[in-house]
Image (cartoon, rainbow, N blue to C red; front, side):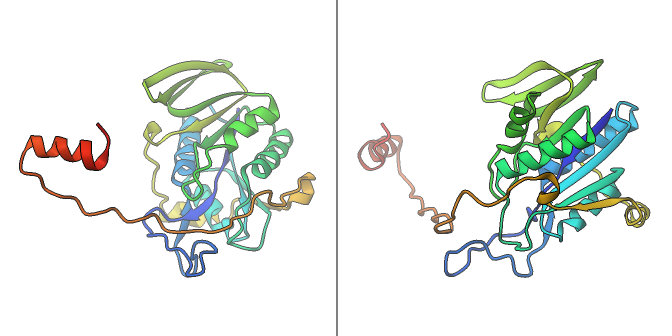
Length: 253
């Protein structure tokens, strides 16, 4: 079974994001970029499936700027077999919208014919949490979201999902789309020998035109602002004073 894993290039999760002075977006100058953490978990899961003999090939695909090659090479160094880069823009400040990404991924799926697509549940830059679901709808495939455990049983996948009430276990028929959550696994670090080997692994360069998909944005960002700072707290001398403040000042009781 072939496994396809979409990965996205995002600002590294350790970096403090800063908004441009004019409010037009996030400042990306000299900012460290890396693979979206949820996508990294998906790559790790696909590689583990290959190591167990469940998967025969792991293909990673990224949609965005040319610099996403670095992200794909990292996935190849982790253990993926080959990569596809769809260069959809040359502007690092342009974020390809989920529907356009889903349409491109649907075209890649039809070309590659994988038995499973493993996605991160969301990207940490826009928190859309929509691409996997849209892809399942476009393909007419089953889907399982927020996965914290995945087991392949014949032509079915048994998935434990993280939901508000706790954990939910479902089975879905393959081929399927699974979006992964944080607790599924802990991604490995790429070793230096594997980083060197990754440079020789195949990386195909494509464009949206190759798949007949229009990636023109449908949304316009009007303004970007930093979250408001939290107000300083106050100390109270007694429970009675706390209740009075919650009732009279906060208005929560």
